[in-house]
Image 1 (cartoon, rainbow over the protein chains, first blue to last red):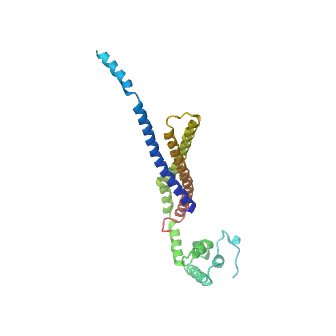
Image 2: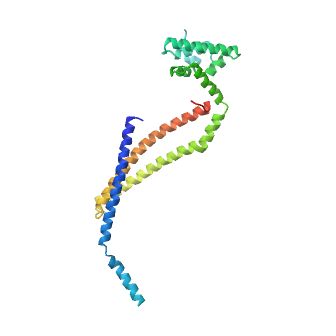
Length: 59
Length: 200
C-alpha cells in the first residue's frame, strides 16, 4: 500500500467519523425542532373537539 | 563462448550447447563463480539425462526457458530447489490443477469477484443518490423553500457531504485494489492451471 493510499484511507476514516458525528447531531437537532413543534401544537384543540363530538353522540 | 541469437532459437528445441549458451547469456550479470557453478550443474543434469536415454532436446524442454531459469537463479534459488519445482510442474500436468481451477471458480472465485463488483456498483449508486439529495437540499435552501428546519438541514447537508467524501475515497481505493486483486487472482489461476497446486 503506497503512502498516497494510506493518506486517502485516513481521510476516508475521518470523513466516516465526521459523517457519524454530524449524523447524530442532525438527528438531535431534528428531534429538538420537532419536539418544539409538538409542544406548540394545540393538542387539546385537535382532540378536544373529537372527544366532545363522541360525548354528544352518546347523549 | 559464442552466443547464439535468441531469435534464431525461439520456439525451436535446443540441444545442450545451445541451451547452455543461452543460459550463460541470461546469467550475464551474476558473479563469475556462481555462473560457473550453475553451468556445471546444468551440464551434469544434461549428462545424467542423456545417460538415462533422454534426448538433449527433451532435457532442455524439461528445464524450461533459459531466461526463466536464469531469473530463478538470480532470485537466489538453488539448482535442487529449481528441479523440485520442475517436478511439481510435471506433477501439475495430471489435470488436478485444472479441475481445481474450474471447481473453485464455479463455487467460490467468480461469485466472490461478482459480489465485490456488485458492492462497488452499489457504492456508486449510493454516491449518486447522496449527491442528488445534496443537490435538492442546496436548491431548496437557495430557493427559500426551507425556512423552519434550517439548522437540522445544514447539519444534514454536512453529513451527506462527509458521506460523499467517504464514498469517493472508498470507490477510488476499491476500484484500484479490485483491479490489482483481480489481476493477481487471474495470475494465480493461470499458475494453478499450468503447474497444479503446490507451495509456490
